[in-house]
Length: 556
Ligand SMILES: Cc1cc2nc3c(=O)[nH]c(=O)nc-3n(C[C@H](O)[C@H](O)[C@H](O)COP(=O)(O)OP(=O)(O)OC[C@H]3O[C@@H](n4cnc5c(N)ncnc54)[C@H](O)[C@@H]3O)c2cc1C
Image (tube, rainbow, N blue to C red; front, side):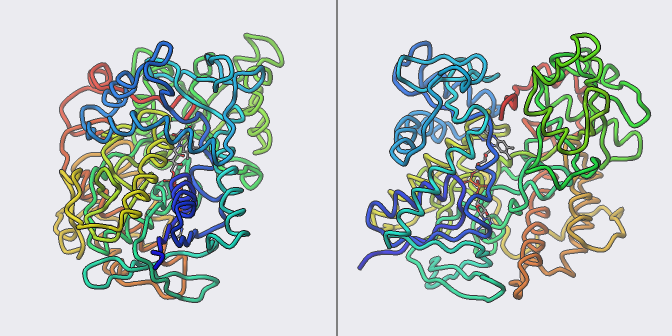
């Protein structure tokens, strides 16, 4: 009998896995909570890293592995990194078979610094990569181009009766039978239903909505992590959340609704000479780092957060002042140098040639997730996870730019290959080194910290709490306070109960559980590492910045 795979999520990991499994003859049901194009994947800009030949001109798989390990701050699972970098070219070819066209280096399409072989894709260079190896599509529209092609491919298979797609379908729980995951429960148009399956692949993406400012779209609410934890799965590395230093704060603009998603303001704008000002119009970065606005980007993120905290406005924003560039470089410079940013800031109601741009650090990518082995198996039989929801260990404590789309591809495919073998005996994931097994919530209630905030639970209150207490800047005191408030909310919101027919309440419970787990992990790690920064560690920011490896967020 044909075995059924339920794939949850329509980002790169879910779409690619669904296509591979369908083409291999499996009975595939793809469930996604919004439209097919609602995903983090859609917004990816920079591209996908891959070494396309071994050796490639000026590059090797070993160099890609070394760059990834360095960015991960010594915290990566080396076997997983080796496998991902080695198998990358296979899945790039897989994407091309499904209709993804990468830029070929022709005028107007490539990013600056691209190289290409005759007839091959253009390869961009990003900071922290030691060679040009970033494939891109539509210039900086890589995610939309990749997802767009994969969506066309799944729709054509759906039309041919080979694949079932359920959109606007929120998966609310995993079904367990005889100690094995055997399907999902979901809400569609407010009605609960159940789907039986031989295995489930979680490809539900990240959790940027945990924080007030995020580059992630609204669907990134940590659902997959919460579903897996409630099913008893181990999770790991949850303290590592990467923040982008300067994201437009759309709520502080005249026309937030006119933006089609979060807007990253590239470091290149500061590179050209734009400066950061606080709400009093004062430049503040020189007080935090000798390189001021050009300090490494995690230092810029931390300095902004520190300055806002000092001003008593930890969830507030600062301003990017690019006005001087027009004065110094001539009228029309900003439009010519940054056409997309000029258009998008104008859409939001800001003429940045003469007005300030409100910006703040924004939650961007979660390195941690559901612990998986090299075949994307979680610790629960019948449950796979791939993409941002998973923790294979390839991202370590800090992700190298353009490695996350690649991770979704490689491990999404490996999940399918494992499933097609017939799900033989299911041991513990090889990668489950520091897996945190929190299934019943009791361990979450054990933190002291009586400071707690008195606010009642709401998603907005949770996001503000996480930003001020567990975001870019962390300390034992702040984290204990956050833990205590989250525990108090959890007693009321009951994250362990399955939601009724209210999708928003389901997401709230998921965010709350994920927040508890993140704060618990951050409390446990008392030293700073990668993207996890403890301000109560007795070292200077400047000292840290010169010793800790950095990941690039330049285009990504
Ligand atoms: C602005 C931005 C730029 C980026 N640029 C790059 C880049 O250049 N290169 C790079 O490698 N990475 C980049 N990243 C990171 C990368 O985009 C993501 O890590 C990656 O796309 C995650 O893919 P995924 O398939 O795991 O999840 P996603 O693409 O997030 O997809 C998750 C899917 O699961 C669905 N879902 C979630 N919960 C449920 C539920 N309960 N029920 C049903 N469906 C559910 C969602 O609706 C969504 O369809 C960027 C991220 C952002 C936000």
